[in-house]
Length: 136
Image 1: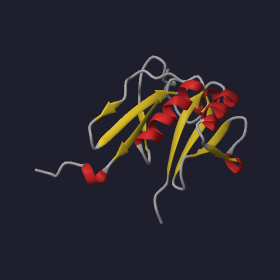
Image 2 (image 1 turned 45 degrees about the vertical axis):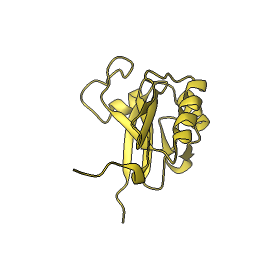
Image 3 (image 1 turned 90 degrees about the vertical axis):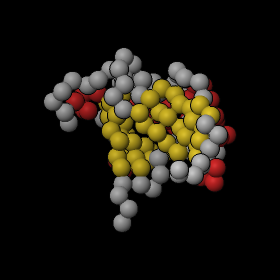
Image 4 (image 1 turned 135 degrees about the vertical axis):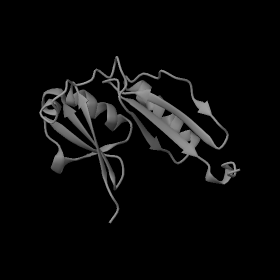
């Protein structure tokens, strides 16, 4: 059985966060979604739990990091193509996210990213495995 990953992120506003990620094409599992947390489905094995800050705080003893001021983690998602990378960044920008960096093109690998409404950094990457340089 493949291992699954559940990334937990603190958010300020459930309705705004759900609308933001829905506009990027992500869905939510209603079985694990309520006004305190929402289970965003990235793939069959990857989920992001969007947890309103007071609820998120019940899982930790340290203070919640302010992702608009400091970065604790970069969430990176693979994409099927360069076009998908660019489309998701454009959708994020249109939905109120920010785009702090220019795209990076390394030939075999192309990446770009955005910050969501709470400042969490989402990197998007496409890699053409046929073009990966051979190991020396």
